[in-house]
Image 1 (cartoon, one colour):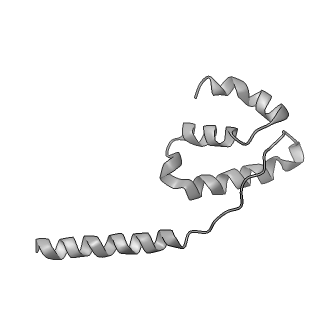
Image 2 (image 1 turned 180 degrees about the vertical axis):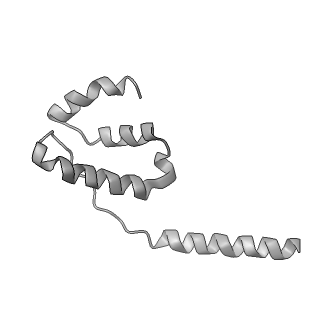
Length: 86
């Protein structure tokens, strides 16, 4: 019984690794300067990257900090006060 469970665990891990191997590589995110017309596109890019990174960005604070890495100009100035809270 124990050997059967161990075999099932091994098979499951192999399947998980195969699924991860086919993950789509998303293009890099363009930095956001604060232009209103580009905000929706930027947020969509961040959303997909956060989903793709999964456990690496486990908490909302990790996700906000990650998004902050792509801010420049006015957007970064607006974001700076939140950096002290992270």
